[in-house]
Amino acid sequence: MEESWSNCRNVANFVNFSVNPLQSSLAFSNSSFSSAYATVTSSQETRKEQAFTVSYLVDSLGLTTKLAESISKKVTFEEKRNPDSILNLLRAHEFTDSQISSIVTDYPRLLLLDAEKSVAPKLRFLQSRGALNSELTEIVSSVPEILGKDRSFVVYYDFVKEVIESDKSSSSSSSSSKLCHCLAQGSKQENKIRNLSVLRELGMPQKLLFPLLISDSPHVCGKEKFEESLKKVVEMGFDPRTSRFLDALRTVYTLKKETMEEKVNVYKRLGFEEGDVWEMFKKWPISLTHSEKKIKRKFETLRKCGLVEDEIRLICKKFPQVIGVSEEKIESSVETFLGIGLSRDEFALMLKRYPPCVGLARDTVEKKAEFFVKKMKWRLKELVSNSQVFGYSMEKRIVPRCNVIEALLSRGLLGSNVPALSSVLVCTDQSFLKKYVKKHDDDKQLVLVLMDVFQQRETRT
Image (cartoon, rainbow, N blue to C red; front, side, top):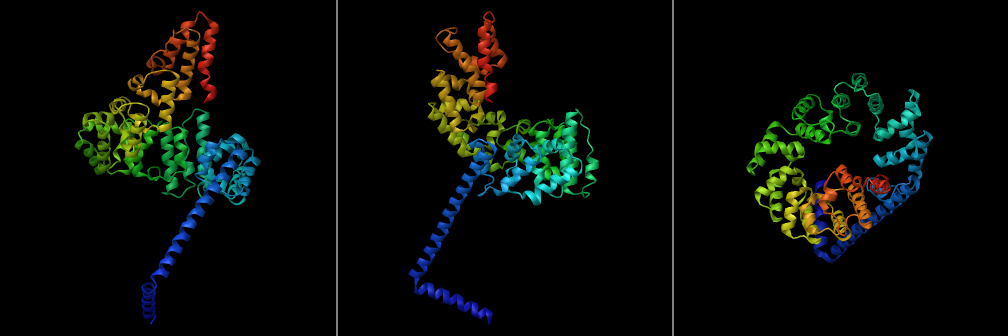
């Protein structure tokens, strides 16, 4: 009976649509309009919340607008009661303004947690165990994400404390076995603490170790496979003090032996020697995670830049990260460099000399090109010959050195022409100072002035 009634309703709906298509069309239009209106309204609400969040972060923590905008892409809120309660709680436990700003920057979701029900009990518990405020604030500031953990919060806190204290005493000793007793045997948390302790003993620094602590990535939560993968990565010669070590560990852990062999064969079919493939892997372990289709597509894109097969392989061997750059990014890079006055042949030459240029942002390239050509009067030809200068830091390298050159030019100590770009920017700091500052040792006052100009970079960074 129920099935018959359902069928009757279906027929009736069909008849209604057939008899009055205009009415159904209007209903559909109204529905579409409502959906579109809801989308617009939702978008407006999101922008409103982001604007409030940015204003709050700037006013309450003194963050820059740029940083606050970046944080607002991760979390937003429309009223200040909850974030205020979190900030007041942290201040009550003697966290400094600097520490609080750092905590919110690293873990903005903290502002969304319930201060009294979630965060306060953890801080009180740590104090009940004898944690001094100075210890508590230092450890929580190092890994604020542990405040968002529940079951493993205490063990994670103790691990961070142990690492920080052993670093202060220049000791690599570990008591992971004691920490693991607090965790279920064979659990992800137990495996993680044990694995991180091993990485710690290998010399992995805090900046790499602590993010793994609050991660659930399989390559740090396994056991037998972790040990096997770690052994391979160590034997390959990766430095555990670098992020590249973790990229290699993740890749080896994730890919089966057969899969890795097939990835190597993909590159061999494109003309690479097997030794070249492993050298690329050492430079950029993620190179073995891309599909054959993606690698071939990257070759095709680079051909459009005016490169031939041998040149593409050479670029990949020098800078395998180019394989991970999107086709859109490469095409945009071509347009950017053509836009500053280079020809396609000159761009191809730049790409061969400095492959990372394909990953540079448009505004970065344009800003540096304008500085080099308009302010310093260097020719575009010099930029092509020394294309690595586009990768140098404006604040730490380019501006300080050029300020020294301008100071010398204004005193008539370099003639009327600016020195060659390569002699100013490509050399080391030591060589630059020897050539343009220390040669004036007979004028102590001038040397002091030039060094002051050069070292102003430290106050800006």
